[in-house]
Length: 391
Image (tube, rainbow, N blue to C red; front, side, top):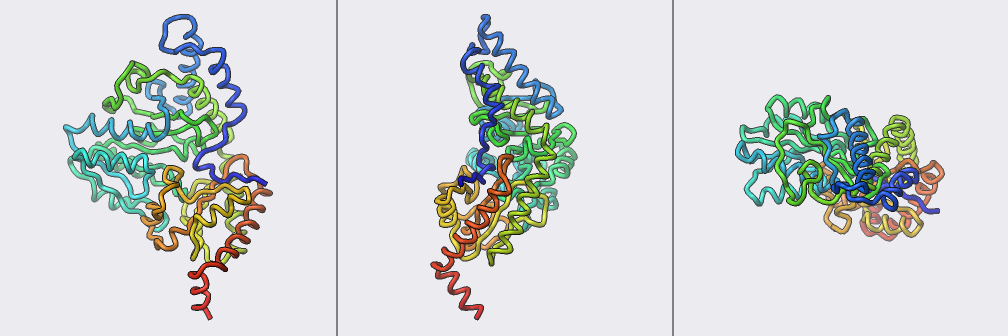
């Protein structure tokens, strides 16, 4: 059996979504920026895709910028605000558990003379709002906090953060790459000024994302080139992918609540079963609201890489954290920020379920996992030392 439990890294392209894209890869191939008749179909399709996304978010079409990825959207948001508001201030606030697309961009901006404050989180990975209030200064121009964490699934209090940002007239950016299409997001109602998302997280194509940029928030170009995306993001429009993003999002939100409940029940079943069958494990952030399909499990006295590779040999795909840092042998910055002991953080695996997963697959994974953990622990000096200490 092959089981894919790495949906937070990427999802399978939905077959129906692929069918909507195909005509714009083969039949309607004109450059949407051209003026001749071959561009008419592609221009109309691009405009329709933009309006579909805007309608779902409750915003206007002119506030949607298509990008090549969620990482590009994050970069555009952070660098664009930093550049546009630098005369007002050079202080930016984020958290210790952001995705590397945000974390490394802020690090780069720090090298350019900006000051960055990273807010601490509690043991469940929730941002400390008191620390946020205390961190705000007269020269603070941006707050950037993710909607839900990609590794442990914790939702952040974006509504409360938005209220604080508004009260201090600070621009607020939210990385919603993990939540778009999974929970309802209305940035205008919430008070979010910029929102990043990516199609391949909700069964759309890879290589296409987007950024909501509220009208009235100053914009500074971070790329130079042509006038695509209303002069905001140059480059020949990938119309097929834009169509795919809109189709995938529309399909995702249509059954969003039901799918959230189904995945949550399947995840809870998975966690109950492994807690019964495998000793000395911890479900991270279990006490707070999480993404329905996300389960971060720490297996004490083991290395996560050994578990991951053993599961892979049985046809099971999981992750040790963010796909963008999968080749990094350092312990997850998210888990360390939550106060997890580094020696245990290395033994953490992320299981992320999606709409194609079944109970039969979960049963297979649980049984395989129990067998693998027992075998690996029997070979582990740390486990044997722990067992000896219990006698």
